[in-house]
Image (tube, rainbow, N blue to C red):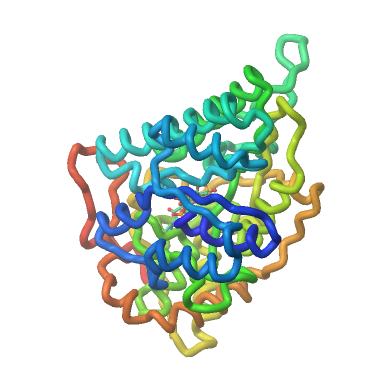
Length: 394
Ligand code: USQ
C-alpha cells in the first residue's frame, strides 16, 4: 500500500466507502535508495500517511508491515481480515533492477513468484471466496510480430480448434517473473476454484488522481533509470532542462495509461469479480505510443511552459526491438464500463507543473538520468554506464 499505485488505490477505495487493509514491507523505498535515488515528490513515513487516513476514515483503514514471502504473515493477515478482494501489487516492479546482476535477478523472481504463491495458498485456506486482482504486465506478451489478444487466442492446429493462452515472450527477468505468476494463478483457479483477474497493465504515468489534491497525499514519483518509467522520466528531465533520453531508435511501442485511469480500472475490477473458478485476463491501457513520439509530446508541452526541452538519443542499454509492429486488444475493461478520463497532453502538463515544485530534489539526483543498467552484461556486479554513447541530439 506504500507504492505508486498501492497508495493511490487505497485513497480511492477509502473515498468509495470501502474498508482497506494495507500491507507493505517498504522494499520499494529501500530499492530506490539502493540505486542512489529518491521520489521527486517527498513521501511521508507510513506512520504519518496512516494517521492522515485515520483522521479521515477512522478504523476503515488498517495496515500491516510484513512480507508476503513469509507464509505465516500472509496467512495471518488474509485469514483475519477476510477480504472480498485482494489487490496484489506487492512485487519488485522494475525491469532494469532485475537485469542489474545475478542477485537482483534471483531476488526479483523469488520475491515475485513466492509472494504470489503464498497469496494463493492463503486464499485457498483462509479466504477461498475472495477475488484476487493480480498485477501482471503487458510486457508478458513482449513485442511479437502479430496482433496481441487479451489473454487467450483461438488456434487451429492439425485440424482441431482450441482456445489457448496467448504466447508470452517477455523481455526481462522481471517481465518473466510476471509470466510465471500468471501461470501459477491460472493453475490455482483451475485447481481450487479460486477467482482471479490478471491485469496486463501498460506503462502508467502521472502524479495525480482525484484524491491526490494536497501535498501530504502525494504518491511517490520515481525518475531514476531503474524505477522511473519513460513518460515520468521525460517530464522530470524537462523540469531540470536535462535532454529527454530516448533509447536507441525510439520506435519502441507500448500501451500507456494515466495513474487516475489505472486506479479507475482496478476499482471497476474490484466491483465486478469473475465467477468462482474463473481466471480472467484484461489488457489495461488506454493508448499506444512510440517512445520517440512521447519525447516530442513532452518537449512540445514543456516548451509552452518556457522549459525549452531538448531530445537526445542514447545508445540503448536494453535488449529490445527498437522498431516493431504493435497492436494489442483492450476491450474487456471497456465492456465493464472503463472510459479513459485523462488526455495524455493534459496529464503531462499537470505533471510538469507538479514536478517544477520539486525541481531541486530532481536536480540533486541529476546523474540518475544517464546512469543506465546495461542489460546484455548480466554480470555478477552492478554495471552502469556513466556516460552513455549519444547517438543524436534533436
Ligand atoms: N525508455 C526510453 N528512455 C527512458 C526510459 C525508457 O527510451 O529514459 C524506453 C525503454 O527502452 C522501453 C520503454 O521506454 O522501450 C518503456 O520503458 P519503461 O521503463 O517506461 O517501462 P518498462 O521497463 O517496460 O516497465 C514499466 C514498469 C513495469 C510495467 C511495465 C509495463 O516499470 O512495472 O510492468 O512498464 S509494460 O511496458 O507494458 O510491460
